Length: 129
Image (cartoon, rainbow, N blue to C red):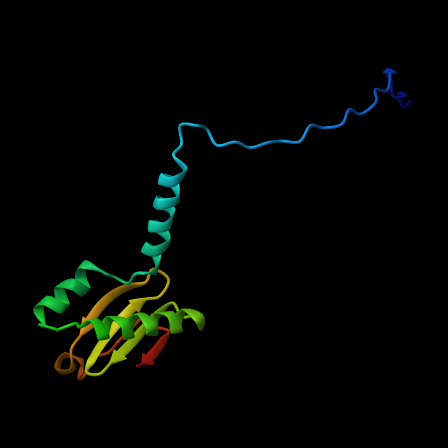
């Protein structure tokens, strides 16, 4: 035997219109300070970083990085990013860099003499700039 469902009748109430939500920033938050910090973070993500390993290689191999090299390296990273690359070998003149495109971080740096006979692994693209 199946039991019949038991319903308790309740009066139907009309729907009240909702009040619009308003969001306010607490007065303790300095809007200009927040904007400044946000801008610094946005600009910081555009810069190219060098890992400790890359810094050691640049120092040990006495690689002279000039502003023009950094600009060309940054351009190559942006180009690789638009193509969907993850880890790239970037060749600039007689220098080679392995760069994490996602993190915009130079992983290692190799000069012309050290580059000969070297095998670069764990890269998915190469950019000659």
